[in-house]
Image 1 (cartoon, rainbow, N blue to C red):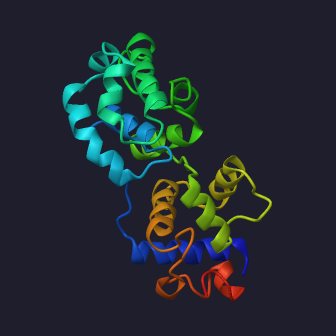
Image 2 (cartoon, rainbow, N blue to C red):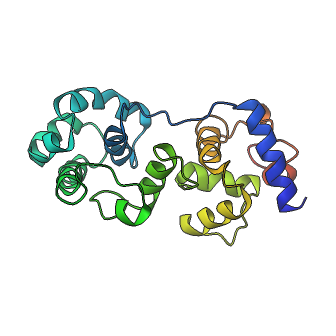
Length: 216
């Protein structure tokens, strides 16, 4: 099957099976989402959603978060992975927002990655979810699923290479949603250790299913 045809079939499947696909992180504004995405690195969305309500309540603005210390923030987030580093990143991020961005979350990759705790993946999530830009954030789920299905070749050995390949074949207007399709599919169906191939509607399309592997 040609790549263009594969992408079309995958898109048609997800449009039917997952017509609503969005982040599972809870937030009310761009600042809250930025905090949540920073906290979600190597941590589950479920855990992040458990600890953010008090944090959001007590530090509702960049100014409020910038005025505190990492030691104080640590007490709110100590149950997530790498809480010491993330506490420092959150306070540093808030201070930079106040100092350099008029307390507004920027909308470009170049500006977002200047913020402490924000790498390319986090910046792409913000661009996609908040600003509806054609940005593809490649986390472990997206990387795994896109390779298993065959959307990207094995030569795409890095998140950046995978991102660029997916961007090449998914239409720009689909990319923000496709990001969530791949994440949610990887989280609930095409899981890392025991993929639920018998439940997957991509059987017969997926490269792994065509090889007779992929959890069989």
